[in-house]
Image (cartoon, rainbow over all chains, first blue to last red; front, side):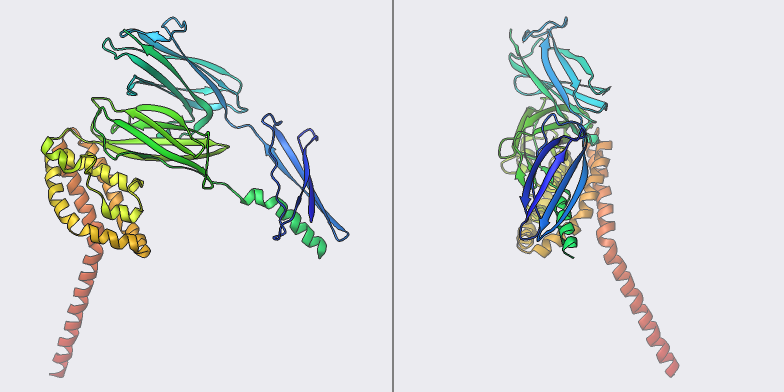
Length: 187
Length: 279
């Protein structure tokens, strides 16, 4: 038999409607995908069925909330903050990291881990920063180090990840909280 | 009655979304359990959601040295088959001991974490290197592999790392391993074959090995306390492990033996009493 349903957003507008047939187990299944920019709040799902002249209906509420979500950009600069992609041994190499909390909730004690790798993928410099990041706020950090005077030439890289805590302490990755940038070291 | 049936049907309509909880899972392994300084460490793993591969997920990792300091971090994306890989190279002056790699994936509101360990052995002479640290000829933990099902299981990797990173990092430890290997490999191939072909034996061995794993984990902590002196550290570690292993595995036998002895004495005493009464 056909079960008819509709999903209404917090403002009462219909965001999905349709029907689903019951299987041999008497269960009707239907998947509804909410839009990326779906409104936050309480949604209602109404369903009804008519069978042999009898009808029944029911409803249920569910909430849509936005989890932690950040955007992250990483770029290499000189010590004055000017964009730079090529460095010489002995020079200071700096990564400018712009972190923005695009989620609907504040992120307490956001851990930003920054690792620089040389051309052989040896981690040569690690740094981290811990701080709160309010919803909608943006923070710019600068992490850098001085290349060894005997630094090998080639393509170096910096990788940044954002966590709720160190992974060793049970931290988890904050969605989209990762970014990287490469730079060249030449003589 | 029909209305009730319809109401039940409507209830079922909503239930699947509540009970069909999908489980996100991440695995991690390294391509070896032991690396020398300047060697590349290759991480591999897979992300699945209810056993289906998850493509396009970001996996983050954090690598820590034996002193528990972060030595590196980064991320990788999963392929359409759910696999991910990452490589980094150990520093030329990497300290010896156990390293830990932590990984985490956060996908569609679900999280999963995993960790693995590898060792960096203390620099040893060429003569002893061939004994256990040569990657191609690394001696296998046969019984543990049969018990846990794979060389890549964390328990097996821990045992190998404990051997390669802790025990053989000292002269005393290497001498111990020579004797131990001669004894262990005299019977382990037969035992491991039996375990791998009998599921009940696998279950029993997992239970039997559990205390050993915990004892070795505790002992490795003792080692790290005295790691500045490898010989002292391995002797302390060995003594502690031996005491705990003896206590855990032999005490039930000792209790049984003493109980049996006590019973025998009592029976004999009763017999003597009975004989005395007759006279």
